[in-house]
Image 1 (cartoon, helix red, strand yellow):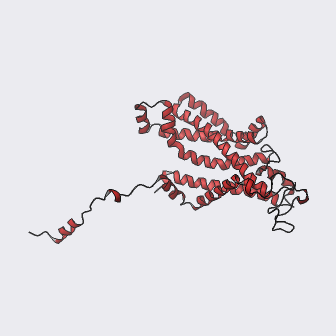
Image 2: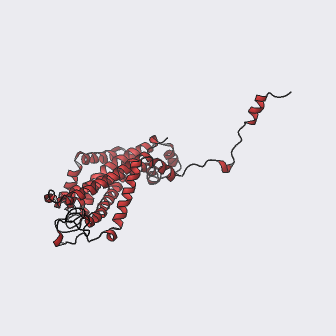
Image 3: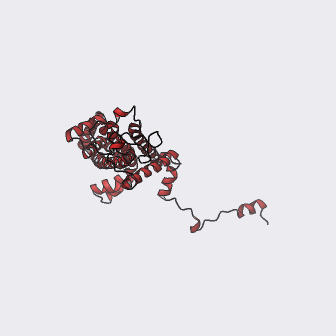
Length: 311
């Protein structure tokens, strides 16, 4: 007896298993990260700007047309080259002491990025350690650490930085230390919250049953799974460190003359704001562009690392 045509057709459409070579491989983590990061066009533009700033800082000695501290007494407050009276020798003009603005801005990029890198590295190291201890051991240790962080957070960040610099003395190194002290509570509280979210998960219990010690649990099991929010916070803290360094330099507590630091450049040029706009506008634009680029790049990192935003 013949089977109905429909039955024959149904049997001919049975799906055969795929060969091993035809199975779809999971995307590489870096490729997946870039796919989500690149969806934010502002973040990609910010990344390009940040890479350009890093290259400028690394090649400052090669691309700067003049020395950052050399004074040209016959060309004080020379305007940019496109303005009447300007010269191609000083593309962005000179400051009140006859120093080339473009060269000082280029070298200031290196200094600002260095301040941000050192300050974030110090604060991240100390904050992660304190937050990891507080989140893992809990109890009396956690209370002591959190109350100390609360006291530091109760003070305005700039005021606390000024107080630290006033104790240590003005200077570039002390500025980095002061900014690092200000940012420690943010990393400590964030790390503690991340550790508390991970410490009760199955993989931690399995590692403990397998005989892993305290340090192995803290640094090999828990901490690597807390890095995503810390990376985002460190990126945003980088821009905050540059702003705080500029504020301290503007107050005269940061890098001291003739160091080409953007905040100090603003402070020394305030009296010429009406008749020499470039000596104030250009350092301010450098701070604005750098901080904005780092912030939008941080937003893209947050979107790429946050699993709730992934499809």
